Image 1 (cartoon, rainbow, N blue to C red):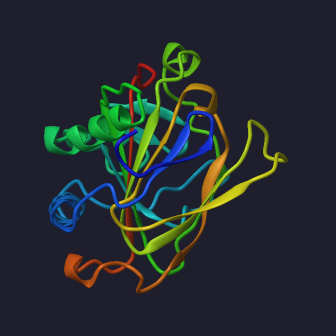
Image 2 (image 1 turned 135 degrees about the vertical axis):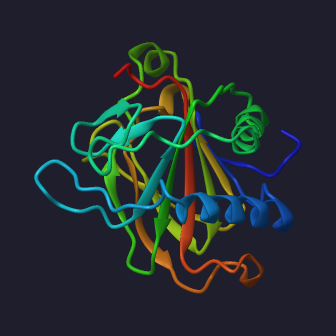
Image 3 (image 1 turned 180 degrees about the vertical axis):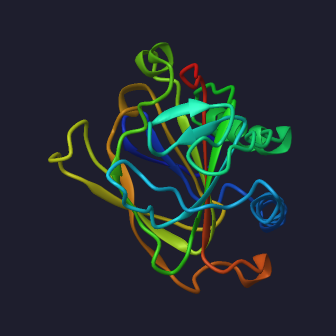
Length: 214
């Protein structure tokens, strides 16, 4: 590959410093505008009543944290239609997938905003269509702002895990045999992001293809 990358597992590739500072700033500003808009950030409540430790907005289609299903409207929050997925954002994910020899036509982006205490428990992204899961269509993750301690393991929670620091401008692609690996965010390192972004905390964009029909 012509760009710096590290294969963490087969099909799971870290792309450090993939985005220029200018590209990061544009993405951060676009996400902040969406998140602060009328159909913007909210804190999801999952099954069992617990609240996630991030603020979220889903683009293209909404992921319902109570039902673990995709839907056109935010049925677990305010009932508003999910905002569209801007093509400028999709293009970044397509580039990252292509850089590691994979293909993605994203129709959903989940944007998570992590504060200083933000975390994400170990989980599998398995709510998309079965055919996309079986064929290993990748998920593309884009990091902006503060560095995250990203954890990725195996196909069960008990498998050995690897920690990958994801800094601002980094990409992480996992597909093929790694599509269903458990992963999460153990911590965010405050004040490690580029000050030029004017961003407190961390933004993470995860692009995926093929939501299950509502």
